[in-house]
Image (tube, rainbow, N blue to C red; front, top):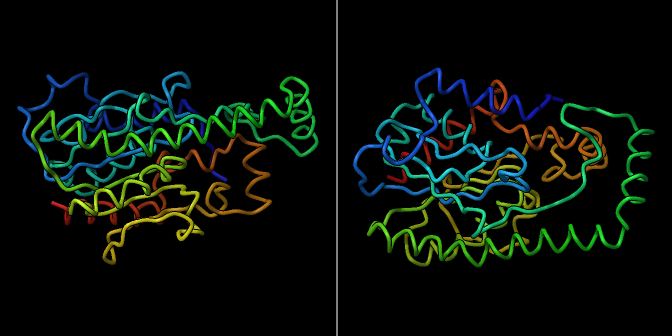
Length: 285
């Protein structure tokens, strides 16, 4: 299993700074605003918020694009930088509009059993689980996690169409859309597919670490032509590859595999997905 540490996220993203593709410090760094051909409506994963060190600010994916609003989370940040790096010009007329923390809290709030970079054994795993149950009454913890997650997803589902409408009313732009969701964010972006399809401007969907990966029928989604949907699940990711082994690994190492998408040296599978996303964005223009 590949290791993942928060410090490595910062280090990985900083590589794009050295390559000349920099995080934006504000809209002043971008050229005069014009309407993009494509807007990526993105929803980050659970707890990818500033309080957990998972907010990296607006990103400039191309010198010719508008900076994102910065709420796409580390995995999509890395993915879109790699799309542009491998396929220069792809992001020129793409704007990444992510649901912010007011529209979608991306909350989970589950107490971790492992710290960053740890990989603990079964006995210690059980001991820590017992300690957490003693510290947090089990009924309170279940209520907090379950309702926090449900409220977070519900908020995103309700607000996603409003974010689209507000963006268009503010800018006067009427672009095509590609939805992109990571982890619980995939539930949010799947929910908005039909809305965008009904107004005739849904061009594609990208889901990463998607809880619905094995059960796409569990939630209504738009019909898309072949090649317009990218759904990526790493083997052993407990969120989308359900197995006792995957769940045990996730508990013992703070779900490092699930958190690692596109944050390490790209694998052959990563490159396939990067290329597929690039093709989707190019064809959406």
